[in-house]
Image 1 (cartoon, rainbow, N blue to C red):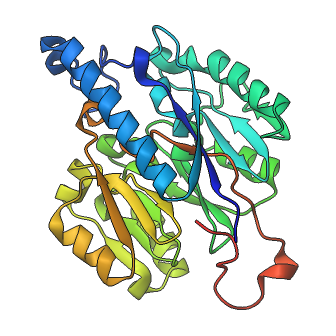
Image 2 (image 1 turned 30 degrees about the horizontal axis):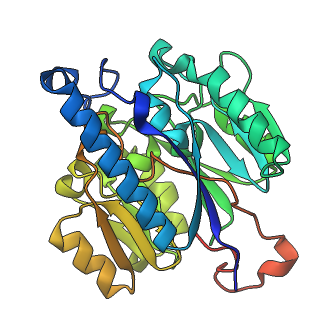
Length: 299
């Protein structure tokens, strides 16, 4: 039996929507009923925690900090592979305070033996974690974005630090400010993605590397519901409540969709993937991969 996935979440006590740094954020709406929305956020976070636990994950809950409401999105905190964490450098001042908070948290995780190494991107090199550098366990490379948040120069640092191939995926839509909003590799090798978010070069990279029958195009409705921003554990896909069409498409391919009501976090531009960070992702040594699809490392 494979080990249980280890996933980091952040307690939502300090979550709110008080500023706007992406088109999805609704601080005016939040201000109408902050206590009600905060209670709903707690309910939603607890539901996601339960769903991940039932899917076979060990969920580690870190403490947020006052004044850093977007710490509830730890996917942006770091890229983690093979026990090594490369911590983010945020573009917007509203999130830059998270860097020191997450550094302290990740050093504590290292002291507990959950990580072997903690490092940071250089000052001035913007990169916003696993939300913009998504590990493809089947293909053994990173799909890594540059554009609204992460700089192109960050791609070389990712490749150099982890010693892994990095496939550039330039984003062109402010709505898809991170790659995880519009792009989700699945355990069976499929890629769920929203084509208008990507440049023609990025689409060419994708379509040259992934067979057409393994590409699942997301719709505007899928995007707006943050259903592409999903957590895939084995054949289970935990996501913000999807449209019936997307659920059917995934069911037909052998996945079990676990829908979660995450609307409080969608008011800040985040879904299930944003609210999590996988701590135990591991690469597969080339010699052990073989010639077939690389399914030894579970997505």
